[in-house]
Structure formats: C-alpha cells, structure tokens
Amino acid sequence: MAFEGLADRLQHTFQKIKGKGKVTEADVKEMTREVRLALLEADVNFKVVKDFIKRVKERAVDQEVMASLTPGQQVIKVVKEELTDLMGGEQSKIAVANRPPTVIMMVGLQGAGKTTTTGKLANHLRKKHNRNPLLVAADVYRPAAINQLETLGNQLDMPVFSKGTEASPVDIANEAIAHAKDNHNDYVIIDTAGRLHVDEHLMDELKQIRTNVQPDEIFLVVDAMTGQDAVNVAESFNDQLDVTGVVLTKLDGDTRGGAALSIKAVTDKPIKFAGMGEKLDQLEPFHPDRMASRILG
Ligand code: GDP
Image 1 (tube, rainbow, N blue to C red):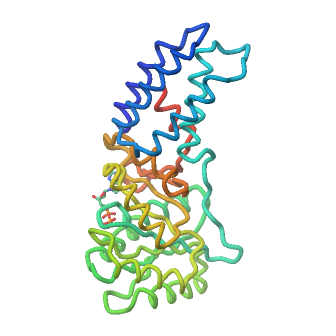
Image 2: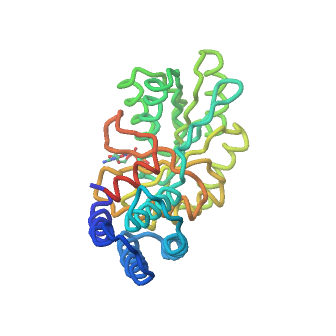
Image 3: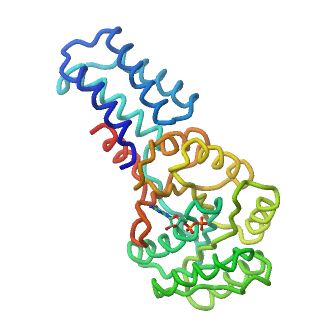
C-alpha cells in the first residue's frame, strides 16, 4: 500500500505525544525531528520538508488552546492540517467549458499511464458527471498507442477519433473537436505522445497542440512510483506547458509517497486524480484531507 512506511512512522511518533496534557517546546522539537526524518525517508523533496517543518513548529508552539482536545491532540491536528495543505488543501474540480466541448489534453512520459488514464477519465466523466466524451488518439509515433486507445474505447463503448500515424497531431486535435461538435460529445480528451524522457521536440509538439486547441485542462500524468523523478518531470512539463493539474498514477503500489507530498508545493498545481489500479474504474478524485487522514491513521 502507498504511504505504508510513512504512515507507520508518523503514527508511532504521535502515539507518544497524543495523551500529553502539556506539550513543551522540547516535545515539539522531538516530534518535528521525527516527522522530518519520516518525510525525508518517504522521499519528499528536501525543501518541501524544510518549509513544512517550519510551519508545523511555529503553529505547534503557539497554538490556541481548545477545550475539546488535549495539547497533544492539538499538535497532531496541526500536522494533519499542514499535510492536507501540502497536498493542495481543497479537492480540485475538473473544468467545464462555457461552450462545449470541454477540451482536456493529456500529457506525460511514456509508461506513466497516460493512455490508461485517458480511458479512466472518460469513464469517470460518463459515470459520475453523465458526460459523453470523445477520445482522441494523437500519439502518431506509436501505432501501439493508437491501438491501445481504440481497445479502451471498445471496452468502454465510447468513440475514439483517430487518423492513424500519417496526420499531424495538431490537425488530428482540430478535426476531433469539430467531430465532437457535430456528434454532441461534450468532452474531448486528447491522448498526446509521450517519450521516455522530457525532450524539446516533444515539448514543441505539445505547445503547438495547446496553442491551436486552447484546452480547458492540461493534465499531466505522472507515475507515483518514481518518487522525486515524478516531481522533476512535473516541474519541467509545468515550466513548458503551464499544466492545469496532475494525475498521479499507481498510488495502489507501494510508493513511499514522496511525489504525492511534493508535487503541489513544487509546481503549485493541484493533484486532481489518483490512479488506484489498472482497471478502468480505478481512478479517484484526489482528496488531500482524506489522504492526510490515511497517512495519520
Ligand atoms: P502511457 O505510455 O503513459 O500511455 O502508459 P499506459 O497507459 O500504457 O500505462 C502503462 C502501464 O501502467 C500499463 O500497464 C497500465 O496498466 C499501468 N497503469 C496505469 N495506471 C495505473 C495505476 O493507477 N495503477 C497501476 N497499478 N497500474 C497502472
């Protein structure tokens, strides 16, 4: 399970402070030292940890006294609120265009789960929001990616717009939007090409698509299992494309959690969804507060 090590360590740390009727500065110091180590061991970005601990320390030392909680519980509450904030605070909603279709561009490195997430997102929009999405195969470099999206479309019984590998991704995207208008598809989800590494050619192509179709959302799909690499990838994609949100995949695996805990602070972009498995119904809106509760028990 994701966050297992971090959850164990933090819960162990808080066991000691929980019942305390009086929390001294020394207690706070000891607690924050342990939290700091636990976060670093969970592969959270160094600077993110530093800022986080600073905030917790300040708030834990001069907190208001609340009758309903012991001082120990209050310190834990502070950590929980800060963890929630770190992951974005409020749950972030998906955009809706004033005039349909709403266009979502999916970007990310190969293997992160972009194509699978395109299918999952379409499924989510239909099931939870009663929408009628069109999937668009714009990865013209890999016939396998086009086939994969078509297979997903079949499984979901949803239309897939494709023009094989000969057309340009910009033309495909433009034509797909016209097609969606004609066919009353209220969402268009464009599966773009990925690469093994961030490179200039990929970014140029994605920028061209963005300029042409003016998407309502650009979702960056990153693999939570890759930890700080996911954060670095998110930083470069965001610098180049100004993404609107992140989808963190493979949170069902035993990731230590560093990506989930660092991405919002590093990119200032919200995590909108979490991939919780390979199946098409295993995509969940990302709730920072629920995730914090899961970590703190
Ligand atoms: P793409 O190259 O970015 O389009 O990646 P794919 O969509 O082909 O996914 C790569 C692999 O990751 C596939 O085997 C997917 O089934 C798997 N995958 C995608 N999302 C998740 C997830 O949330 N959890 C798990 N366990 N596997 C996932």
